[in-house]
Length: 65
Image (cartoon, rainbow, N blue to C red; front, side, top):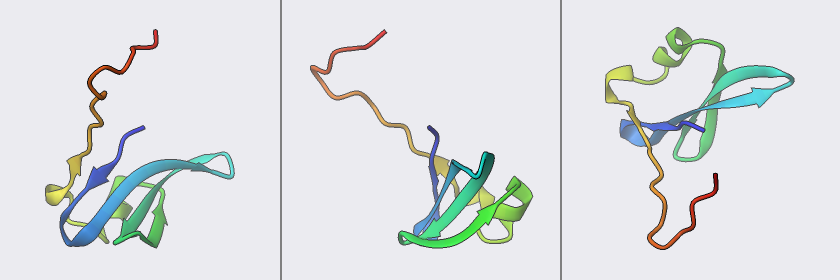
């Protein structure tokens, strides 16, 4: 699943809550808000600062098809 991080310790990730997809905004690991849209996220975080975190497979890890 995708996760974005930005300045000042912000982290945004999509989650499922009560059957709905929401964007969870945290700062330094502390919950800030559950947002229904990117526009809502923008009220907490500067969207220009967000970068997607990509987890790379570890060396020697077997690929699962």
